[in-house]
Length: 151
Image (cartoon, rainbow, N blue to C red; front, side):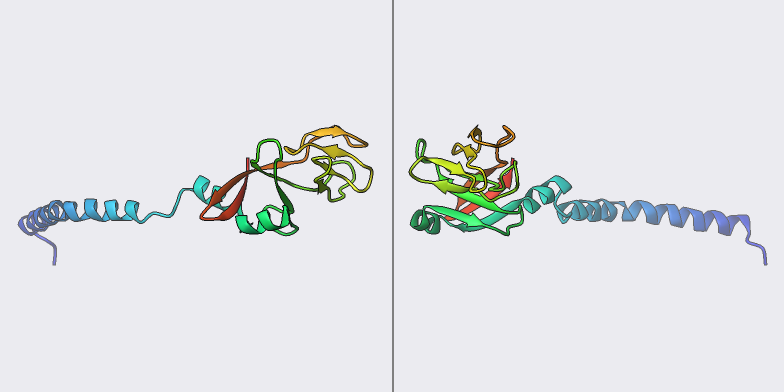
């Protein structure tokens, strides 16, 4: 049986009325969805590129911290004797890939493979290297923990 014009208009009017009545609920659900949205991609990327390495007390006890496996790869943390700031570098020498060590007596990083030297911030200062610095990281301390992130 075909629909009459009057019934069609009545159903269309009721539908339009219902859509207007539901509009505030649609706006509220959109606001709730935005409030519970996942963190932005750049925030997630920053979190993924931050490593919680150790406690500050552990660094103070040992004088330096070598973390061979972290979310960022190998990391060596020292306290710069000149500024007392924490410094973190990737201890992989850019020349042959050997792990450098912090030398307290000369206040620099020293490569055991070929005696390349790097200052506390990772800048090359001599030896058989490719005149390239060690990769360095940003260091922050939060609640007594050393956090390192890519710069």
